[in-house]
Amino acid sequence: VVYLMLANDMIHSIFPNAVTIGEDVSGMPTFCRPVAEGGVGFDYRLQMAIADKWIDIMEPSGSDENWPMGDICHTLTNRRYGEACIGYAESHDQALVGDKTIAFWLMDAEMYYGMEVDSQNDVVNRGIALHKMIRTITSSLGGEGYLNFMGNEFGHPEWIDFPRDDTYDTSTGEFIPGNGGSLEKCRRR
Image (cartoon, rainbow, N blue to C red; front, side, top):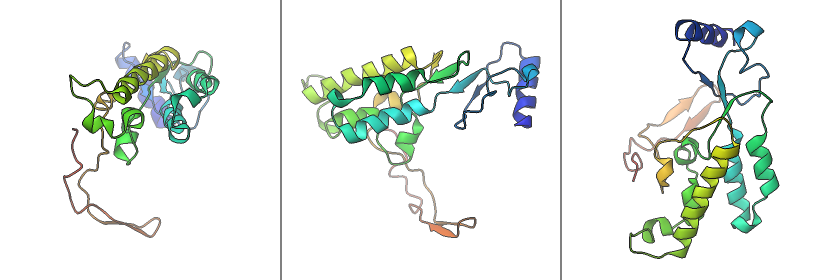
């Protein structure tokens, strides 16, 4: 924490117009307070709960008619008074760890077959409309800024898996299987 305080103080001293954004899950109270006030000195905090909330809502309910609007609004606005935040609807986590992006949750297999220019696919049309609404409400209520992860805005239909070999985690004593250095899932479609 002291390192982050020193880094933020140095950055803001050398570059007064610089903006620093911290990724913090702990909810540390002084994360976005100036170092002179005893804070860590970040200008913004990432609103990390928002992307998880969207996925949590889509998994069990299945249908947007069942989405809990009060719960969504609470998550989007749940932050400390005076603490500037950056909101985002989805992140690289959905595509990197084998989960689905928002677009894939909304359109599923129709992502592959129903997105032709001349197609009038109701699932795709509804999914795109809901995707736009999700990003709109997130950018409106989720904070003082909006973050878009490159690739997710296009509804990347498959998860990403970079080439990796088998490894052994000495801290847990577990063997972690790799993918044999495969490039098959190492791309955006």
